[in-house]
Image (tube, rainbow, N blue to C red; front, side, top):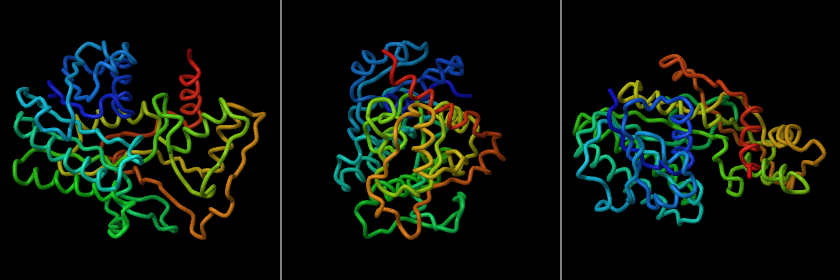
Length: 321
């Protein structure tokens, strides 16, 4: 039974998705959730509604600074979702690698020290490496990997290392570990000014003269709404089978160009969609699609919010005063 959860990344996209899920469903129940944040007061000022949810507590700390973590507290579960996917590109590859790997070591040590029985790591579909053109969806047992000699793959390499660390701690300390390999998402908390194509399209539809497609317009993606994401993560923390890895994402496939058209049709029918660089289209188009049959079969989880509804909800929150 979950009685006390340590949540990292609680003020980021994943964390806010979970907090809104708790606020909407009341699923937190009697559970106490402690959120480690570098700037808790900043979040509390920006999101007072989420910060005041019963059972939510904040401590100031940094996952890379061991001394700042709450070693004096006891937790039954740890949900480690702290990764700066938004500002990550501003870090050097080496800094990003250390952030993920060192942070995971610190959280696993804290989980063991606090007596936690279960540890859920949010990993990434990037650990599979480039998806072959003829593979429609990546299953959890796919043995691909990102190239080791390319610094740009530091994020994915670090996530692979973090997953292996979870296996080592399970072997050494018998803590139950569950891996959630996360793909692409959309929702009211997704930044519209970062490197996320769907967020950029929504921003353009709302505020720019045209909707611009940068890069490979033929690339294939899927997007899971953050409300489904939160439900899936909370379910895995509660019910996920120890030692198992689960893909977390949508199975609704769409090209980037068609995604731009969909956003345009839903939000700004009068605007044009412009492909900035048609030469960016590669001979073998980029594919990033999860096979989610395992999580559906084992835990009954599926996509409940259509992409169109998710886009509209994200746009509505972006234009609220």
